[in-house]
Every structure is written in structure tokens, then in C-alpha cells.
Image (cartoon, rainbow, N blue to C red; front, side, top):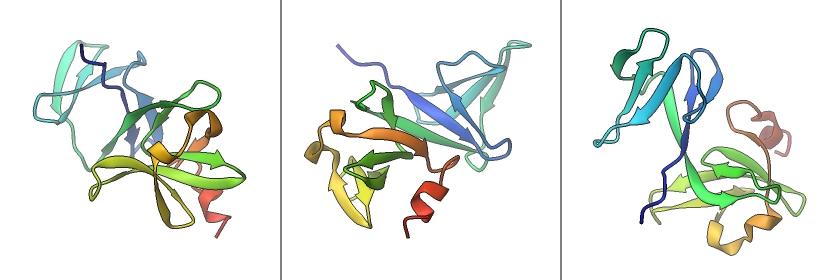
Length: 131
């Protein structure tokens, strides 16, 4: 049995986070080659493969925070009075939490101890003010 793969999309032009399961004028999906594709739901028109320059896909990591919210790549979290961000690590092929430039495996944390307080696109100031 496979689990549904959830993701959200950051639209760099409109500066808007779009959740793939949210009904709006566009519906996003990932094709079998990993490309982001779209459908215009107002006209039911296939939009084809969308520009990676405009859209950034952020995957759900498979954990929920202490309030039950799904954690995504790019989320800013609060852990033990420390701000960190969730990101993909190519070297270890897993999602990690970066706190004060230290990379930590998500496996080192209990998700009930993490709290999502924003994301790197809409709330970057949370990470910047710490520096």
C-alpha cells in the first residue's frame, strides 16, 4: 500500500503558496517524470508542464507538528526556543532540520516537539532576525 504524496507550490510571481489539494483556478499535479503540471479549472484546459522558474514544489515530509499540521520542505519550525528550517539534504537523501547552520536528521526529533511557525517564502524574517 502506498501513501499519497502531498506537496505545495510556491508561485514566485504572485508570491502565493498554493496547496495541491486546494481547489483554486489551477490544479497542480506531478507527472511520472517529476514535472509540475497544471490544469486551468475555469476552462478545463491542460496547461502542460509549468515553468520551474516560476514555481517551486515543496514536499510534505511525512510528519506532523505538535498541533497536527503537516510539515513541509521549507517550513520554519520552533524547537526548544530555537528557530530552524526544514530542507532536503541531497547528501543523506532525507529531510533535515537546519538550526544555527547545524544539520539535524528529522529522526532525531519527535514531531510532537516541533511547531510550524511559518515558511521560508512568507516568513523568512523569522530566521533572519535570529542572526
